[in-house]
Length: 223
Image 1 (cartoon, rainbow, N blue to C red):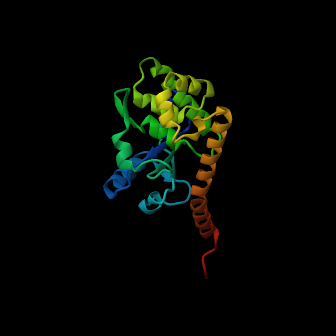
Image 2 (cartoon, helix red, strand yellow):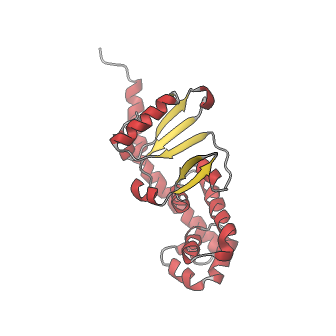
Image 3 (cartoon, helix red, strand yellow):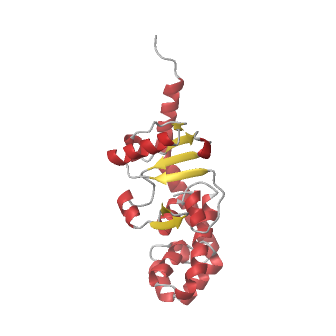
């Protein structure tokens, strides 16, 4: 669901980490623990690896020590701001074949939503992901594709092109995306600022909880 997924979708991003979205039920978490043990992965930060924290939206962080994946960091989550639950995301996943191994990726539209964070690096990646999809499909686009571009394109020139070519769909999309109204540049900036603010507010209580955990770890045990 992170940089590696972006690479598979053709919007290259150099990433040393592996970000995974998992189904946090007991059986699946047991399988995950076994896999992490095989990678000699150890938890490197709070919170601990527990379904309770995954359910609340925390990320669990690991560092691998096995020789072929030495120092690889793996971040695991099961809930993300602004996207559907795992079961629906799984139904919309993309499955690619890489060196005879099936790789399940978060669907492109869901990946774009998941990337709408407060981090500076995510917004150029959103732009590249949607631009790549538009470039590859604009000559034979379905209505579903066009609506995706109208919802998510962040390149003013391309967005104007789609609005001009599909005025009816653009009118429908403008009901839920005010950024389609002129001037596009300012509207897109406002849209991004609001998403960044929403992400900060989402993480505020989670960060406070992490700080409490760190404080308890550092505090000396009572005599």
